[in-house]
Length: 423
Image (cartoon, rainbow, N blue to C red; front, side):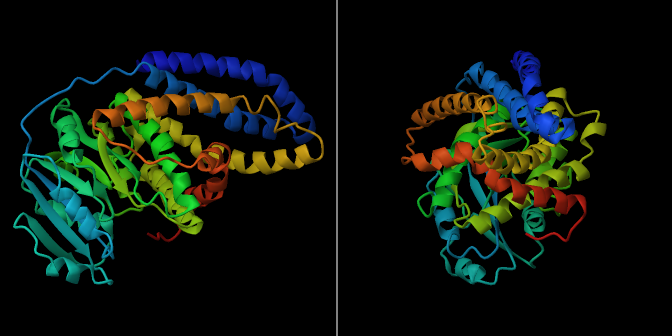
């Protein structure tokens, strides 16, 4: 399947280069060949290549066999920092899990100042729940303190603002336990919990149900999920301890996942293990989050010597290499859209013309396929999502990447020049 997807996307790449040569020449008359080639490659050709690769991968993905196994005991790590408003809902969702194995919970308070620790101590907690007090040293350190106390063969991480679907732990554990011996981690499926709070959360709802879901689906098919996100993922405890747990970094979950892959392990994704997480409600906070995510990606490249690793398989290395293009795409979008609109206003549709918009139908076709796959998955576990904003979808398709591009670029540059890290 991987080879078919790669060959089809390479054929598209050659075709795309051929049909865009005249467009490059037209742009070069005004801006020179360097800018012309840069814009066309990173606005049309590379995104199109990526869309085709993802589309073919999803089109030919194999149906998973329904596997049953003994439900193993598991320990859940919940790092808490100023989560007084959300932690009770998180714990309540764990209590409602349809899972027959024993679930142990290590709550690590990372020096909260909002009364989270006092609230936790006041609750009538079951004997399987432990509270670990720690100084405020960041999420990675909190997770490592919790990991030290884990005695079960499997570990799950959940954020303190995450709420689990009743079948979430059963599904994620079933996937991990029945995966091959090389599998070190399984990423769960995240959707937006506070989707009705603002237009910004409605935008992110489309991002989580189309963009993030689709990417993880594809990567999971190749046992190369690049981010086993801290908000909801399951791991083999032995392997976590073997690599020393989480590193102190902005993107501790990205770095951890890449470490696992570079050591020769595999990571996958389970589409029907659903958790709901809170997303930023204001544009400023969304920008900060994406700045952190972008910085985390560059940090992963720096901390994990991807291209030197002899144990990293070709599929994982290929998918990581696609990430190398992200900064160039974001910069191209930042130049392309404003410049194109200015020229369009002057009556010259040189950039925002029919040929530059050819990539949009590819994107819409991919969105449709992802939507079909997601809806089929939700039927399997009898889960329904509320109706999403149509306006949000239009803005997501046409402008979402552009409006987040400057924040991502700041994140990339901040890590490259080693600016002080802020969480």
